[in-house]
Image 1 (tube, rainbow, N blue to C red):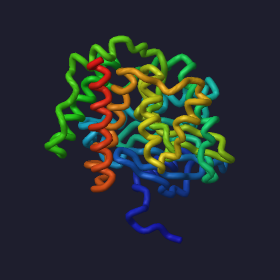
Image 2 (image 1 turned 60 degrees about the vertical axis):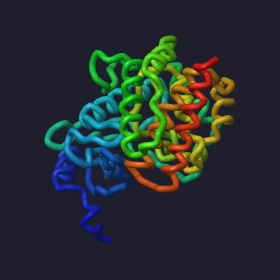
Image 3 (image 1 turned 135 degrees about the vertical axis):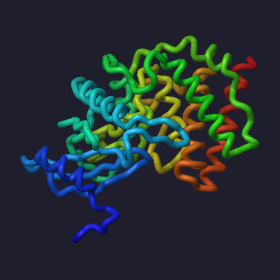
Image 4 (image 1 turned 90 degrees about the vertical axis):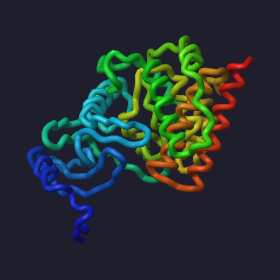
Length: 301
């Protein structure tokens, strides 16, 4: 059956695919910055092509300036790195940079069973235990992870307050910095672990997809992000079962709640601006206000 015009792959993408022996492009997904197409390689194997939906430089409520080329380079480097340590990923085959940038990777099947939570927790532990890549994350050069997180929280809070005028004031920058001062930024963290980015067969994770949000930080940042994702059933996460397999009790303390605030803030912007939903947006904002209050209580102790 012919695809409608709105779903046809761009002609320049078809030409790039052909040059690399790929044919039969079919759209399989699209997000804020990237579209993904499935295709067949010359040897008959399945591949996916990940390419920007617009120009190289884009922006959204969570990230006003996005360099999609930098994200593709980062994903290419990170997936090659973690694959060498046995982390299941869509192994990259080619990174094509030009008028249209494309990352060509292995296609990974999925049978719809979702991720077994014990296996997911064990996978996250393995990820956090491997040495981080030498490639630098695509946040601004010469900016530490701590500085990046503080700036991200303050900028995103200002953006959300423009949408929700009665939002309380952002947590104070000096307190944010003091809380993050003890962080050991020694691990690669994925930061987008949820059902949409897990390719599974028989409950086993065969691929952890979309590494564009990954950072070099501490595992606590990942666990806080997973905890907030677990509050949304569509993400397919049982946080306590994941933690049990990861091998740690639920974290506590101010830094954990600062990281949960970072996650809740991102979700509030998603549901009020990027994918607006009146009900989900209101719930996300209420959740953010609650997390902020918990963080402030830790600071007041």
